[in-house]
Structure formats: structure tokens, C-alpha cells
Amino acid sequence: MPTYKGCGLSETSSSMANADLPTISIPSLAGSLLVACVLNWGLLGILLVQIYLYYAAFPEDRRFLKALVYGVVSLELVQTIIITQNIFTTFVSGFGSLEALDSIHTYWFTIPVSGGIAGFIDQVFFAYRINKIADGARAIPIFILAVTSGCASLIAAQQFHSAGSFSALNNNTLTSVGVWNGIGSLCDVIIAVFMPYFLLRAGTGLSPTHDLITNVLRLSIEAGALTALVAIAHLIFYLTRSDTSLLFVVFGVIISKVYANTVLVLLNHRMKISGGRAERSAASSENPLEISYPSRICVDNDRMTIRLDDLPRIIRTTSSHTSQTPKPQSPIEFRAASSQDLESSKSGV
Image: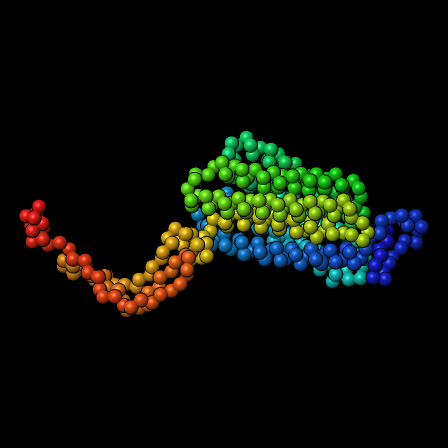
């Protein structure tokens, strides 16, 4: 039976042989579980906003892509529900029970399984995009690394389940967790480096395409760096875990949400907000002088009249951003040429 330290609570076995068993810090483990649950719920909220935007903006996406997106969101919903149930069992149903606090419960699923599956989907998604913009063979190494990381996460899940408690996690799990997070972070770094390279090579030189590629470059680098950072942090805290440092639980619980949000952000970057800041900035760069004239058009038999309304007219320039209110102008008339005008012009020629 493990021993526990912290908060003035301790349980020791009657047998002195159990004195060599690892100890668990109650504040460290309880705090890590609570912080992980709160962050998981926060990232789930961000993910739900992303999935709503995707649902509203891209109804014509292919069924395979929709199934992928909704499958990832469903997995994350299940993970959050299970984590919440574990927290309820630990701090409500098992209040005061140190065994309930130390138990793995179903964290073997919420940490290695969900994190491995979400990471695999994210990395294969990037490999698919690289396959579209570059030679297909160049995406094979990313796919191999993604498969290796995903398989290692399943092995780690089996070892977590066999351990049964956090205090019973032995060094035999270091290899599987190391391969899972190490290979996964390496794959994320490769994606963050080579995705911009292939995008720049596929550029057309046109201004709209250049702006789109620039946005994808920024998102790819930021997404790859973020996921790699979380995976490396989880690996470091797991390798250096002790009875007073169990922060690996926090990063292990949220890593799947980070991967899931990455996929949705990269899909939603195609969305354009009508009248938004980006659209106005692009329009002002293309048209340095923007003039707004409220007007009415009147058409008679041989005459078209454009009448400017007696309303303030706003002239905006990119350099001064000043507004002027000129005086109302008289109607501007455009008269269609009659047959007499045509005959007179011919005779003049």
C-alpha cells in the first residue's frame, strides 16, 4: 500500500516492508487533477465555438472531412465527460479516500488514448495537405512518424491501466511515453518547418494567393510549435516526476484538446468575415481613395440622370483618414445621343 504525504494526512502499511513504496504528494496530485479538469473544460469551450463556426461557414465540405471533424469533436466530448466523472469520483464520492485520489480510474484513456488519437489525426491531416501541394512521397515520413507515435500511445495506455494507480507507475512506462511524445513532437516540428516550405513553392505570385499563403504559413508554424511544446512539456514532466511533482497530468489531459483545436483553426482560416477588419484593410490597400456618394439613378426616354442626394459625402484616404463634407452638388446628367446629333456629327466629318 503506498504512503502519502502532505496536508497532514498519511496512511502507512502495518508492514515495514511497504516503507520502500513510492510516496505521492496529496497537494501535487489533487492540484494537478483539478487544474487539468478546469483547463480541459476551457479548451472544450474554444473547440465548441470552432465547430459552430465550421458548421455555419462550410456546409459544402466533403463528407470525409466533415466526418473527421465531427469525429474529433465527439472524442473530445467523451474525454471531457470521463474526466469530469473521474473528478467527481475522486473529490465527491471518494472524498477523504487516498486510494480514490491515487487511483488511475480511466486516465489511461483520457491521457494516452485520446491524446494519441487526436495527435495522429492532426498529423495525418497535415500529411494529407502536404500531399496535395507537393509530391506525395514527401508526406510518407510524416505518416510513418504519426503511426509510430499513435501506436506508442496505445502501449502507454495499456501500461497505465495495468499500473492502476499513479504511485504504481514504474519506469517501464518511460519508453512508451517517451516514444509517444518524443516522436509526436518531432513530427509536429517537421510539419511546422516543411509545411511553409512547400506552400511557398506552390505560390502563384498573385496578391490574393500570396495573402492566403501567408495566413496558412503563420497558422502552420504557430500550430506546430504549440503542439510540439505541449508534447515536450508532458514528456519532460513525466520523466522528472516525483512524489512532489505530478504536473505531467495537466499536460497529458489537455494535449488532445490542443490537437483538436489546431485542426479546427486550420480549417476555419478559410472563413472570411464580411465587412471585417481584414476585408477593409485589403480594400483600402487596393483602392487608396475611397469615395462614398449616396445617389439615385433616374432613366427617361433619351436621358439618364444620376442625382446625388443632399447628404454628407465622406471621402476617406489611407494616408490622412480625414472626412470632408462638401456642399451638395447639382444633378449630373448623361443624355443619350439622338438621331439629329448623329447626322450632324456625320456631316461635320
